[in-house]
Image (cartoon, rainbow, N blue to C red; front, side, top):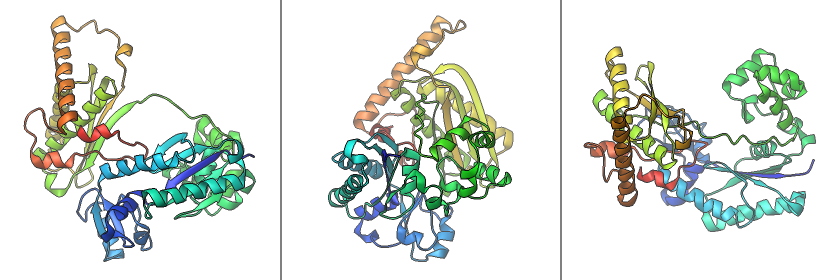
Length: 415
């Protein structure tokens, strides 16, 4: 099969950016953390830290036991987004980016002579040299090249850090037989467990089964799609519309008291509401969930006709919160999540026969007020104007975070 894709994966991205910015961190074991406490976990680790067995998800108290000289750095997500855009600009000097898969991964479709192995290898080397020269020597990447995007991503994992590997369909499964099942994109822990229960313990065994068997194991057509992807066939990308908008936060110990945790919940909800309006959606559902320090999980949900304004969403969120806290007699909260779902554009909304003219006017006023607040905060900075008083300690915690598959718009840092 022809080589059609180049997949670039930035190595230990968050930690590498920190090392590039701060000379004090270079060539030293670094863990990037959401907050400076031993009770949290690493969201990224430098290769110097990985040498001690520290990886994403390692608890910091355990990481410090493994590496007493570990340096913990609080995540600066705005820097990661800035570097992300600089990196994309540099890559596009050499080849157009087809897909931005995450904050640290991109896929590029190969055309013409680029599909020849010697040509694409040189292209990959040029990209690497450009990143080192223009972005910084600590910004390294692994590049995979293959007939389809799935195998190109798999190839990028063959050699880290700073790898460059070409993977042909005839090389599968031999060259990837040492991978765990969960190392393949699309096989999470639950799917890996399901495969193991069916007697499939290795990639070689997975490769031998038929498309119909794989469909049965997955319980959907996705299993059959996976069979073809493993053999280099390009499967069209699902471009379905956004279904949810949400934010979550693990609280530092000083914020876990219920009254402070509620203010954090309100701040997360207002941030989600601002994103909702910027993307021009309305929500029909609001869910608030939290986890206590002893592991108890609970969730409350409210359905409504439509909402995108701060006042309506904050009122509904407060009701859900108070019901959960009172019903379960909660005294401290460790993690909070807010989610707006069943999203619709204004043109998709059906008329509500039970809404009075007064209610309709009130909703329109709330929406106009919220949009005006967005404009002020975008121009003068986050929380320049807010509903009620937001204590300084709550303002500072709620900056934008980066999920693995979503790159925040720069406007979010003012929401």
